[in-house]
Amino acid sequence: MCGFVGFANIKEKILQNKKVIEKMNQTLTKRGPDEDGYYIDEKVCLGHKRLIVIDPKGGKQPMIESVSYGDFVICYNGQIYNTKELRETLKENGFTFQGHCDTEILLKSYIHYGNDVVHHLNGIFAFAIWNSKKQELFLARDHFGVKPLFYTIKNNTLIFASELKAIFEYPGIEKKMDSQSIGEMFGIGPSHTPGTTIFKDIFEIKPAHFGIFNSSGLHVERYWKLTSKEHTDNFAKTCETLKYLLNDAITRQLVSDVPLCTFLSGGLDSSIITKFAADYCKKEGLPPLDTYSIDYVDNDKNFVKSDFQPNSDNYYIDLMNKNLHTNHHKIVIDTPELASYLEDAMIARDMPGMADIDSSLLLFCKNVKKEMTVSLTR
Image (tube, rainbow, N blue to C red; front, side, top):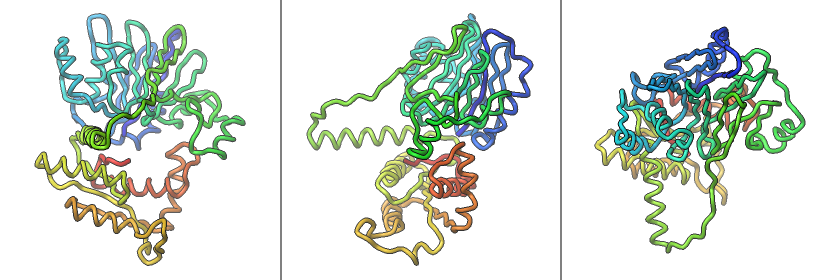
């Protein structure tokens, strides 16, 4: 999953804040348990917690690229799915590569495209890039906001992080709520107005937005917007296009140097993902796909059929496994254990969320992590 933290002040030196960046970074250990790294300069401090998925040796962060006109430093959380196409373009323009991780490709893409890099990315991402020559920090978040990126400004210092709890480790940042955040928490939680959080003066880079922080302050700009167009394809063409898009979206996410699986609930979304992933494994001559599902103690005894749910999830899970020949694992959770993780789930989210739905997901992922590092799910 990874995560990063940082703060920048273009007007003052911040070298004395090494302990602050380290303390902020430690709050993200669960996001990145495998490795941590730091970059400390006069104007910017960056910290990164890494979950190793691709290129264990070549993907260390913060990553630095030195060119004739200065240094570029990146902290990044996410996955870029069009790395192959980007790499080819960069090679044509004289770039060389030390490894095969998407972090290096993203950093060099920024050096090549500048702020327009966001128009060339296919993936889920949040990242910060420091430009030493311009004395400028570039922040960006993916099109639908899959990856989080929070920030606040205090005394000309921009403080940012992958999680809210990290920001509160910066000296002087207080946990205050206002009437709007309280109303949203009880009225539409865990949803909220884009760009805001439940805490006063703590914001998020909105989905499909980037920010530029320099001597003039922070400027945030939108780079993409979903548009609606008339659908003119016939049924056959629609099916063909849909199949292509699903296959492209799913198989691009199957790149990993560590064990990978899918979550399989038996529902339409997870079954489609598992179908394309299993077919890919078979086509590439890989071992059968590992799949995981969650169940609860005595659920089979207490399940009652209805018009809404005529069969339990297990019926559809078994159906998919038999057809796709996956290596399936079932995680069974008991109610007391589920209740005991309610607080942990809220702390992980940094705000009240979906109660037992969150705690069951946290418990499920904790058990899957014993054997797998990456999972595809809806």
